[in-house]
Length: 469
Ligand code: SAH
Ligand code: SF4
Ligand code: F3S
Image (tube, rainbow, N blue to C red; front, top):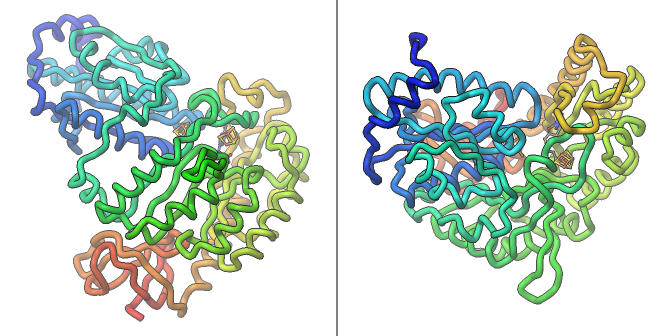
């Protein structure tokens, strides 16, 4: 695309003469960054916009509204948004030349963290909306269409989930046989490296009745596997149908009763919130998949303390033992940060040792990224970039070896697979293993939504190949 020469004021002036498309022919392009909660939010925003006359499009060039749902977790994630906004600015100018309006909105965690600063840095942006106010999107858009620049980043007092429209059944069917369902938002833990408590606010749990109703709607639309989401999903709690206070374990037992729902998962969990009932759910609920993402971040007690994780490495290992005792085929996953301020070679070695001890089926490792406003960013003794790089490489190599080892251990075994979608090749379909790996099977192996038994024949980089058992 050619660089445009239209300056900010030209866009503003042109905007007054632009054709505003009538409702029902408007199109929205949504781009999602960051975690699964943003994926869920993007769907809910799309639903709210559908009720407001915006059809979703995959072609940014034909969009009347471009919405970026952003992530602030590491510097790279946040900066991606600004480079994307640079490209969008050119598109917007081209659309303006052609006489059509294109509104640009920034939602998600960068919106919440940076607010009006986004419009100062990227004047093409018309509206900035934080995660707690998505239900206000239609009203905000009406104002934006009349030329107002809007920053909406309050923590709304009303329950946004009560006010967000539900998608049509046909839309749920279109989205497939697996779905996300946010049950908890926000975080009160304040790990010293993390922006989430600031971008998502304090912990809020959705009520049981709301969650059950949404899960039932999903099941009715053919969804077989639901992943419950929360920044701290195992901190979820609520008043149950029996009047008692429920934790996530009880909620899982309740959701397992819904006809049609064959598989349940939840993510992301904090080690301090893994209570007995949740561990019991892993023991007693065949519907609960034997896979657990339980980030620990570091294996060094000193660093864990500086991170404000509020447990020691030994506590995590004991917890893992208890979980494995409840469900011996559980596969573990985690997150790691290398190069937190003050991390020595010995601290890093302790992380490597913890990884050896746990033996993960998969895991994510990141270089520490100082985030504005977090205590970590203010700490002294930052680790040089080259050292972070070198540690990340070593950790990554170890985790990759464990992941490949886990995949290889499944070869020859017969496992359940949920058939999810057509494969990249017409002769194949793609399923999902209980441990979240994609499973490539023959096209004739089953219908989408079926759970079938397959025998694993070999492993790919990230996936498994299987034949009908
Ligand atoms: N609530 C989850 C994590 C949510 S953030 C938990 O408590 O574990 C997802 C992951 O991003 C974190 O687990 C952490 O590994 C990583 N992360 C968060 N902030 C980071 C930072 N400043 N630099 C590098 N990685 C970070
Ligand atoms: Fe961030 Fe810690 Fe909260 Fe997880 S528990 S979201 S890492 S502050
Ligand atoms: Fe990113 Fe916000 Fe999720 S910062 S990881 S999108 S909660």
